Length: 440
Image (cartoon, one colour):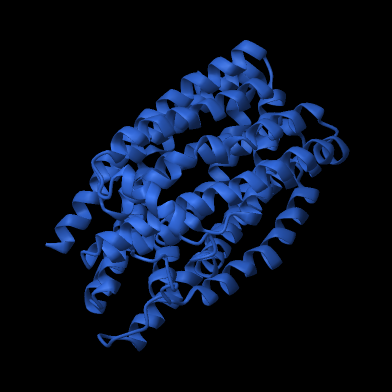
């Protein structure tokens, strides 16, 4: 029964992820035509710089709250579910507002001084409004995912992603620069928040109880666990999403920032097949650990890893001859560089596709320290290697380094296999539940 529900929930989120991937690719294609390589690269540079700051303080709140909500829901503790939703709302507001203020003060002068790009600085300042604009969506989507309302979650995300495509491209067309695209991004976040409110009406507890718990729950509850979760995800994000764009922007040109990001968007079409599995695993694995079903957890991890890897690899290899034809619809100066970066990234993406549930595994088995150490290897060794490649080959060096970084994901799979051999069916310690929030 559990296995069938895992597959059903995964399928629902796969549909949502597929629609999101199509929307993301459509947004990239539209921006390529509207802005051109240099201005699009400026927008992606602003996005990477803002993300660099945001991930430095983003304490893994979503995964922490979703894990605790799913665990409480599996035990039928509705009061605890409401407390964790309230904690997510309060903590997200405090951290989001503080980060936005810092970004407005720091990012514009940094981008002017380091990249000589006032336009990127202004766009990054606009993007700093995102945590406030998407606050309701992030909180309520965590509630939907934790309580396994996957159909509602998928509908919200599809609506937001397609709205964002229109708003981002329209904003770029209206202003003709990266600032308009940034304004469209924030507007898309507002649309997603509005859609989340409608979907949340189906979730217990209701808004009245949530407002009551907001006054009671301490904001510091859960932050210790959140810091560890955030380190795992944020270190990986730095190595895969953020630093590569900043490195190529320094050693190459902003046009190649755009080419690399667009190649990543194309590989993300294949990684869509990982998205639904990964996000279903968070609530499913948490529920299994909440009931100490370790044998089922081992089977679920193996099934998720093999399914993700097989689907992604098959898709990549089957569609590889079609990518050059698809690139014919892009502006002429994009096709060659994007295709070159794409071919370099594919081997690494195939390897990482078998590592779909690593962060969730570390969270539910209380082994986040191991994840931090393994991810630090990417920053300490792989990022300097990527910087060297970028200095040596300013156009494609960053893509080569990024593919090497992807390959390191095998270390996580190896550790998970070792852990399951040491814990065949016995009881293990779950993640240390914070002292609160109080269930009231």
